[in-house]
Amino acid sequence: MKHTSCLVLLLAVVLAGNLVAQDTAMSGIVPPFEQVKGLLLASAEQMPEELYSYRPTDEVKTFAQILGHVAAVQYFFCGAVTGVNPRPPEELELRTTKAGIIEALNGSFANCEDAYAIHDAEALESVDFFGTMQPKLGVLNANSAHNWSHYGNLVVYF
Image (cartoon, rainbow, N blue to C red; front, side, top):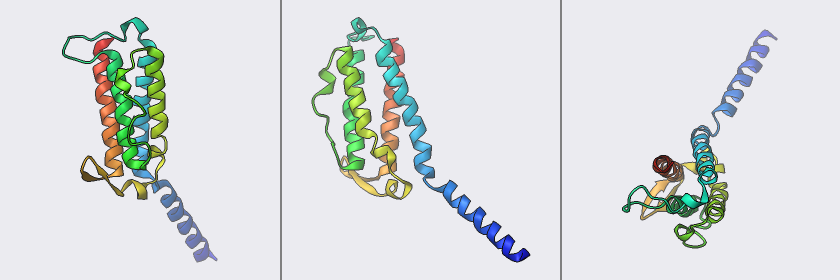
């Protein structure tokens, strides 16, 4: 009986460990994506509409163009992972109004929901990404890094 109890306990620990270990790669990538998503949306909300056309120098994009670019590019990244909606529905960088940009961001984040909901096994599958085969996890990581990079641009605009 003592050995059976130990065996059952050991089995329970192994199974629990397997459950905890599931989706470790995706569980590591989703929180930073969600964090930058919140920061980008908060930035879009916080900036007054009259400053959406602001640019620190003539050589850089306006505040609206940066957010439109982020929204547009997310379709490429997340579409490569899911195989759905790989292109934005329109030229999102041409949107200039606060409401239009927020709508574009919300649409692009919604388009990415299925991509960031995949499990580790699928995350390791390779997809064609701009002519090279990349693991889906790498594509999602690049999307998140791209978003963080442009959030860093927006800080200057504030």
